[in-house]
Image 1 (cartoon, rainbow, N blue to C red):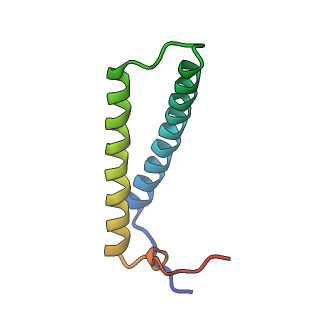
Image 2 (cartoon, rainbow, N blue to C red):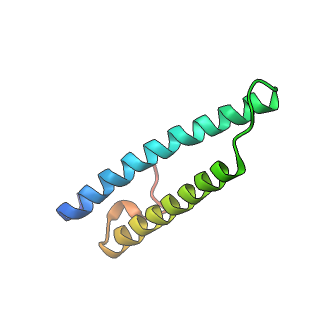
Length: 87
């Protein structure tokens, strides 16, 4: 098997990133539920300021994911190939 071990700081950064992905996923779920509640007149819609804050967080996390992908490409991570088949 052809694997490349990640440096310790990269592994830590990946763990932090995955924790942030989980937190954002929870926030997006709440955003969706709030939207649905507002559409059915059961709750007030999220403020536009809160929506913009959430959008900024999504964009920042997207950049962090892009950075991770670039690092994996740079280090020759064998699982970074897009033509890999999964069963």
